[in-house]
Image (cartoon, rainbow, N blue to C red; front, side, top):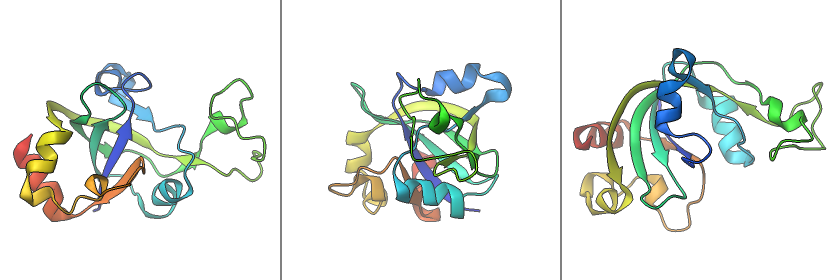
Length: 151
């Protein structure tokens, strides 16, 4: 089992949106960074733990715990010319972009970014490193346990 921090803008998909979704599962669409895509395509497996992080909002932070609920599959938004995530260089025969489904385990109190930065046990969290802008980052077992204690 592996652990991940996955960022989503609440205006795009919030923890509450996942809680309201059928089977409390949503596809993690729109990833257009190759490294983040590779994490989903090559390393994520159903059952992996996810820290659901709200980003690009007034108070960013971890808003819940989820898990990877599917194997990776083609992100259909890449083929839709009306989608913000359309990729003209991608085709159904050779998709560039994949995603996984994510299922809510539980909504938590918001663990704000400021509190995360002040917690010594989270000092190594990749998402806290200067210049990190990836929407998906691996989380160590130690960081996972330390985060769960704070939630």
